Image (cartoon, rainbow, N blue to C red; front, side, top):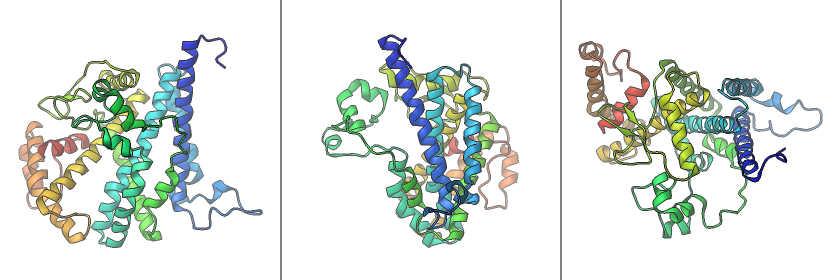
Length: 381
């Protein structure tokens, strides 16, 4: 396949090809694993005379049809690239899509599924998900697992292990933290299906359907973000060269210098695409916006939990009573003040005051995007 290329071109083409194969494998693995979440306990025991494996996938969780639809949409996104024959662009698109799918499930389970159970008073199901996700979600989304080598020689805070600045200033420490002392060790395939099943294990059929509805709600929320045509990024710390630097408002972004190794340059190119594109027609930019929104959603949830721990001194996801107390305090001390500030910037302060008068619901200002609503809450803390 690469016989006519020189050594450097062959190395680059092989690297991009492996990225495409790896990302496509991860996407298909996730889609099949998700469809199996609604299976009966005996659905994996196939034998002679049984139906095909695809027919046993639960229709409530998409079934085989959703897998085919997702792959067709993925092919259409590849066709809409500026150069569909460019291996680097195709690989970047597929890698982003895999990250978005995993982040979507992680966000749904970590936030929306637990909130749905607490709101309905199903403490048992919420506690089950709360206990299982601590062991299931980190390996599924590829979180770095600390070992004895990375603990004895850590990357100094506040630098991040995978950050470009850490790779430039502490290359060996960053390498050990990301890859371990034995980087050539061949790891098994990521246990995506096992982790997804573990998150929802011990749930009744009714609770699983409720979890499915919460996961579907995340998909609809992501569609609204794309329809809004806004950029989506997690709020970054000032002075961190690995991140975007925000100015006075949550959505004003400035680019950073493009220096460092190959991985850092690729990350910077990905962010540059999101900033320079003027519409959401570029498939890579679409996936980048979705990834940024999911990261922003998770960031807000982390801030909420830390704020609740400081304010109430307890895990608010343990009982419905504590959760309702948290919702009331958060609404009065964080949500309404930040939304009033957002409404003032939108010149809709009076309309918002009329809207929230006499109601206890968490209502954002009329016309405010979901990205702005979350970003202003993060900055308020």
